[in-house]
Length: 41
Length: 549
Image (tube, chains in turn blue, yellow):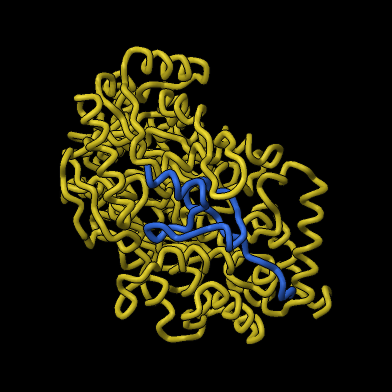
């Protein structure tokens, strides 16, 4: 079992995969930068 | 463990395509290539040979059924695109879970805590009596209410929320998959080193992760008791995603896809992201968004003026919300670093989830687009109906030959109303849609009898019958069971009465259900589960089912 295998994060809105550092939590959802910005319209 | 030490039956059953898919050794998108299937089999056999815990896990779950209690909330009301004309529609995105189902046993693992599935596309219909149309956490819930209010203000017409399916990963956020995974893990022989590694990976992101073996880990994942008010949804998503990774799959962690299949609405299992129209509800403009306890995954309710039904077929989001997509097609990202670029298609779908200012006028142009898409894809607007006279006459004709064993007055031998007939036709068409989607998804394997979605009603019913949870045959379960039975009559003029008699005779003769089922494999498919009904319930039970209506 590899200790370096990273579990990628899935953006709850667009369903694309990202590294952990590229997502944030918004309303309890893990979302990417683009989708998070859409919530702030 | 050498490969030769792995029980032969596990190698044989486990290597079947359906199990490779469900355990994650084979990806659905690559399942149409035989070389990929062979590669997946090799990986599976290698994992078995290297991990006694996987062998033990497979021995516990292979071939096992999931048992559930169904709390019916009524048949889905079918509406046409025309009925939506003159409104303003707003996308309501959601997960695909199977509203109204409670899982009591998952693939052979008895669940000490029943798992209630109470979200999903059926929420608006099931929760109409409480005045709720949707649920989410805040600020997302308030964001959606703001979207309704914004649309009403801009268009001055009634606003209707239209369900649009989120991606498969959204099901990880809802509680059922994480709950069942945890309860299965508590019964599986997972090696200590794997448990430690799993906990380490969870703590990379969630430093307060209790650990798989902690007695309160389910509380943490469900966000209850001392964990109430925590952002448990994100923890669940991470938990399920981590447990589903190859490293843990190989040592026998629960099969996420198999659990997913058990808790997702079958009509939504294989539809593309953004498929829209399964459910609609009337927005309550200006309503407050309040905390509610009707759903364990989400904290706040979005009010409704009423459930509004759902379209017979589902439409791509781009067809359902064409003006929205025209707007999104012109949109550029606004990155903190780097150069703005046009939205990708995935990001446009993401905008449906997040953007609180999206709406679509359902004018003539919109209707023309919907109708055009429907014509090109051979959509039906409404259930064809079964010709109630024909079907019911046929049933009653058979029933009249029953020497008075069963009541034949009123609604027919199985209590089929015209409304149920319409629902049966709807179910038939949806099943055909689903099969077509499977064919596209699985390619040549769509014809494989192992594919779960390729089962006919009668086969599904046979499975249901075999897995029926004794002790929970209350009137609601019986009513649902009878509805299932009636569904298969859609397929065949086979004499249900004779089939019922056959089953009862087999039971009286002392034959086991399984043995008898195997012996009549050549019989008409609809006769099998009907005879099973006779076997299980006998005359008295069948009458009980009829009286349940």
